[in-house]
Length: 338
Image (tube, rainbow, N blue to C red; front, top):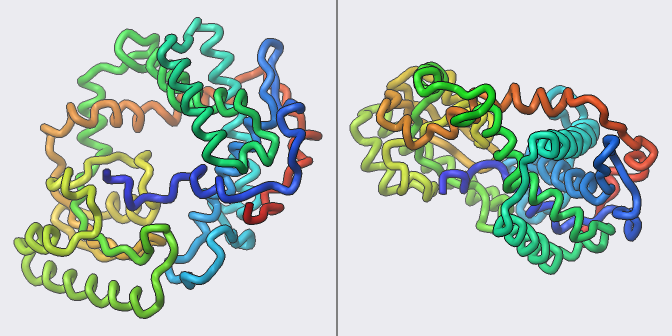
């Protein structure tokens, strides 16, 4: 799967962590409207998730493999803010978006089907049994159901009710194809990981060996572009390329590491570049965008095109009361290995 080499999934890393305050989270509320109340357990889930993402964004690919995997360098900046402020803001933002979406779904009579409810319950029960950090922090199964229902179903149902086929602001195929042509890229890559299978940094010696190999392969490709496919097949550590041999087709909202995306969109067709990310070394080869790939990524095109407006609508939803006294009880930096 192509996201094998993207940033770490936020919650799975966070599930090895525990906040200092425990036991009472789901007896408090963090946000509400006149009809819907969100318990603190939902906010704590997003706080743990933001903390994990901050770890990913502030980590160095050259960090020692013996370093603690749960540490975050809170002195670093993320999107121009200190890491703590960024994580706090993300947790509040995500909680607010969940409540706004729930409220809009209620207004539009968007609900889960019986099988979807059953799936959410199953997912929540599995997470509660697999990750004891949830219960240790007072996050109840009911909160996990809220998060999972939103992430897995409600968010997309609401999005489609606006922009999908038959939606109130439906986007035509012609507009989607035009957006695809102007805003998507197609990239082949050869990847050399500087992490082990657990996400820990390799030793300095092993990382240097990976860099040497990447430099060597890059030199061969620069000398003869026709070598790329053969060298990709023989050396790639990105399993996603096996299922996407013609390259990844994506827009700017794709969940890839930022330096990969920034480089891809700065390149011209035919360019080859070697970059380093927190995950390893990437040799990128930009090829012409294939118009025949449109149908396979049509839903991604719609998301890339309309998700900014959708999230802005959720962020600007009126009538939400925020319980800052509850939020202030929890410090994202106050975590320890569970």
